[in-house]
Length: 119
Image (cartoon, rainbow, N blue to C red):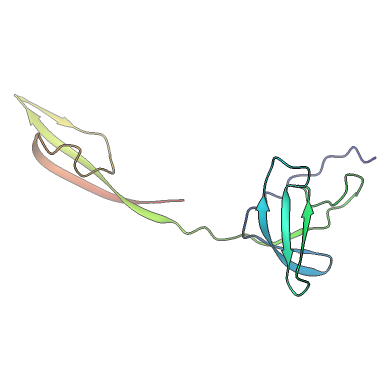
């Protein structure tokens, strides 16, 4: 039995991989089962399951799967708002928030916005 632990390939659904001399795509990464990585291979119309390190059996010395291309995750853009407002003789600045209605009932002096990208 091979006791060497190989590194996890970090596969995610949508990643392109190669195995058995075929290209495939990761269709599932269910970590609660014995073989958590499911790969659907093109041109063979088969799905095979693997360990997270790309091996088929625990006694394999090298992984059968190779990562070809990571799926590109689309980033989304959100707008954050920060307000400067007066209360009595003092001025206050709020924290950044993505809710433009945060300070609708206060005496707003200045509004700042910025857009950020999130995964």
